[in-house]
Image 1 (cartoon, rainbow, N blue to C red):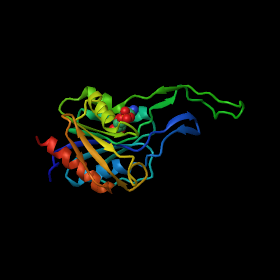
Image 2: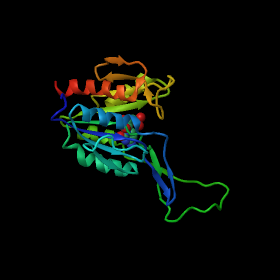
Image 3: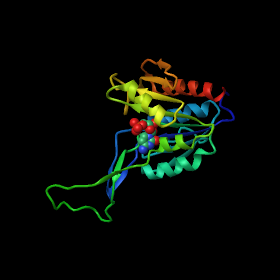
Image 4: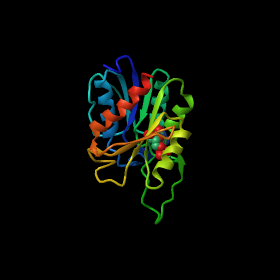
Length: 217
Ligand code: C5P
């Protein structure tokens, strides 16, 4: 098995950022891509830690260490705590970019006509892993609506990644809630590999093939 003595960290799913005890800011990420990546890595023999925000998905394998979290802050702490031990990390989570600056202790009442809430940035988990990177192979995702390649390459550089997976939003069947995805992989040297529309299981296998090549270099 090609990843037999490798440890891999994967983030998946959305994050929920509390507004008050009953409400949150979240997004439509299903977690499927990250869970398929974890399953594929485990099939290839890797020791997998999967850190996931709230999803309806079950752990694909009892051999995968699944850490369930809610917020970006919790995901950040779990991921940075694990990173030093692993050989590679793949950030497939759709982390909320902003969170309420103050979380209300009690349920917010419907009193005013307009409610204003101040938001602050959440920690960028992947960028933080990139800045701590030693020998790990680091992979990120990008979901862009314009200047796709240019923006993805910007992120690759800024977050110190080995490659970035660009999700095509212009294609039917690609993205958030579907069982299929269409990706391109961009490398730092400008090399680009385009893949066709496939199941997320197959996409995960394609991504892990590239990761395996880099890990065994
Ligand atoms: O900058 P942007 O959010 O577009 O970058 C997407 C990539 O960064 C994804 O791999 C995502 O998992 C990761 N990310 C993260 N923490 C954040 C925001 C994004 O790990 N706060």
